[in-house]
Structure formats: C-alpha cells, structure tokens
Amino acid sequence: MAEDADHRADADPGNAELGGYAESMAELETILASLENDDVDIDTLASKVERASLLIAHCEGRLRATELSLTSILAQHEPATTAEEDF
Image (cartoon, rainbow, N blue to C red; front, top):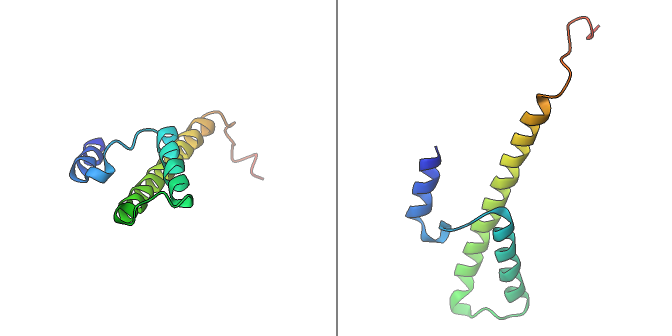
C-alpha cells in the first residue's frame, strides 16, 4: 500500500515532497500569506491554490492516521469488560 502512495506521488509532481505535517502546514501558511497580501501573480494563482489543496488533503490524512493510531494504542490500555459487568 505504501508503494501505491509512492507511485501516486511520482505520477503527480504537485504531490511530490509533501513532507510531514509541520512542513505542510508551514507551506500552507506561506501560500495563505501570499494570497492575503496579493503577492501572487495571476499566472501562478491556480497552481498555488492547487498546491494548497494537496497540502490540506495531506494534512487531513496525517491527522486521521494519527487519530487511528492513538485510538488503537489507547484501546490496548482500556480495562476489558466482562459480560457480568454489562448487567
């Protein structure tokens, strides 16, 4: 499955080098700042917005994966309930 993600990243240069969550958020903040300050040339606006969209999806995926991982870890430490405790 990791190979599929690697393959998709290779197939789409805009998806390459998304990095970790912190790096992606920092890049998103940079893009946002340039959009707010009207520093984006109209010729690059679409590519900036597309890149921001990829970064947002990447960050959301990282958050979901972390949530699933933490849920799994915490579930291992919950006391087991028995049928008698349910009554």
